[in-house]
Length: 365
Ligand SMILES: [Zn+2]
Image 1 (cartoon, rainbow, N blue to C red):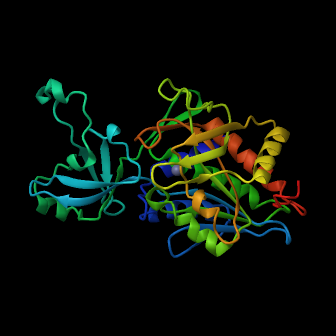
Image 2 (image 1 turned 30 degrees about the vertical axis):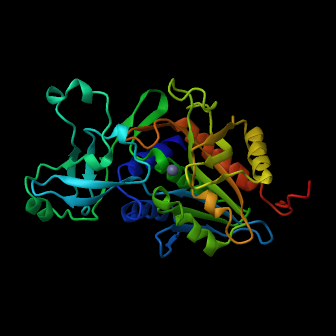
Image 3 (image 1 turned 45 degrees about the vertical axis):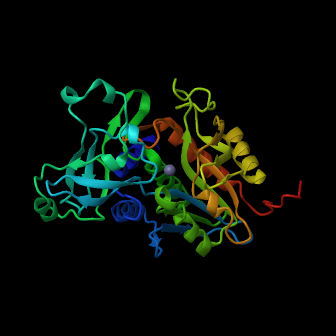
């Protein structure tokens, strides 16, 4: 299982797919599903959906992870060929100077670029410890005029991402682009393979969703159409095992998958997820039976599209499950393959436990 996860994650991390421009990632995921004989369809927004029909009378599940990534959109091309961008998603400006990027104009024609950084020899003492706002940054592609930039296919609205790469590290750890949430997608592929061969269980709608990093609403469209009873979102859990994050929680890289007991985003959206108690019992029980350590998360400042999915229709019993990750939203995010393996096994075990009589009644005791 670990070799498949590593192969899928590595391949998907190398495919650019800015929010709203997920076509190449979707094609890569679809090809992997089809290679295993699993059919999938795309809705109008771009969500890729594979349905595993299950037993009647058992609560239906939507299991989802987002396939889009954050990045930039070209907003202006200067006469000298430098390119100005807007950030798309929570791109940390602290992590941007001198990063390599890819301007996505078409497969095989993509243009490499560098985010500018003032030459050190020209940097005064007062500038050394300041961070430029994204509006002040520019991208240098080597093209020396606006005409040359246009001729390369770049125009206002062109999507830009961190230059995709994968960096295998010691101890089964992997760093690189868009671990958030290609790692979730790799886990969904692994779970899908196992669902394809199961004998019985709930209907499971596996959704590779779009536009999470943009407006957190892509998965809502899928939920409205599929009308699941249960929603399980697979995404990162904020690792708090580095010196700069210690104190935020107890989530450790390599110590197993995680479950979120509380997430809240106070910066304007006033949204988050408090999981349904039946979902917490389900995953805690599955972890116990499988001998998997399940780490617990309670974080402020985290928001996923599950926050919106949970309010669809009569309400959807929801839970965030995920893998510990370091350095979120920077060009080098990091996860541990052992956590992805444990997460895949945990999800399969939990789904198998949803059968006749599985109650979502909050008053049933
Ligand atoms: Zn994510």
